[in-house]
Length: 295
Image 1 (cartoon, rainbow, N blue to C red):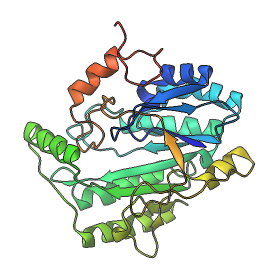
Image 2 (cartoon, rainbow, N blue to C red; image 1 turned 120 degrees about the horizontal axis):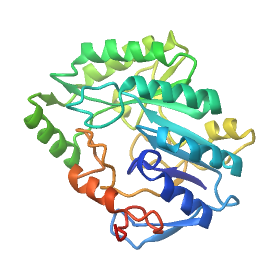
Image 3 (cartoon, rainbow, N blue to C red; image 1 turned 90 degrees about the vertical axis):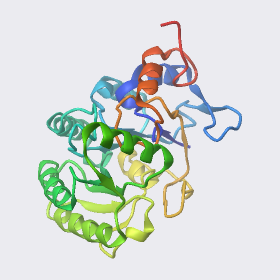
Image 4 (cartoon, rainbow, N blue to C red; image 1 turned 135 degrees about the vertical axis):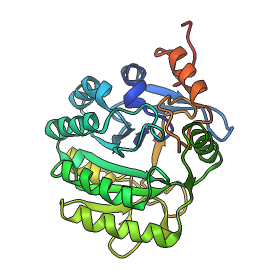
């Protein structure tokens, strides 16, 4: 089984110690986000085909990645680099730091290990379409040779996303809006053209209505990429999470409402301050991520 760590929170940035302790014990427990019973996920080497790490800031996790590699687990990293204004991305590292971390990872583990996520694309008074064209082009130039894929998506105003965006826009005085289909396909085409010059293919995550001939659907949990990284075939069946999702089957070990980054468009956190308190109090020795300790 492929283990996703995690699209519900940023384990590499904030919960690396917890992850490594769970790896040492060989399992973790996950709270079912849909209200069902908790379930156990084996992390034993014989049960894990590979890990997919999702992150805005893998720098704190770099020493742990060496251990993961030495233990023999294949992994891929979905690394979001956006370069948005601080009013939108409240506490992610500066883009210069992210690019340097990207470079360090590519040198250590190879470009096949890394997928760049320019995701989500937010249209706002601070980030209009012209911003995205220029910003994406500049990032493409800085990431040449470090990855072969850029995953894009456009902000979907889920309930938590809308609430977080509305709060950030009131606080910082900007306006945001939903993307029109024609804008999305135009931008996707521009991104594909710009990325191709850097040897990068653009894919779109779970938004089939915004695909065009030059932009195929993304497979963020990708057994084929993990197979290239591992040097042997990893078999997994297709089991998308929503319409248009081509991901291979995986088990996610994260928890919602635990990431303190505070990104304005976040779908995984209902209240950033509450998530920050949960992170501060979390017990790295607990079986379940986000469980409070005595601190």
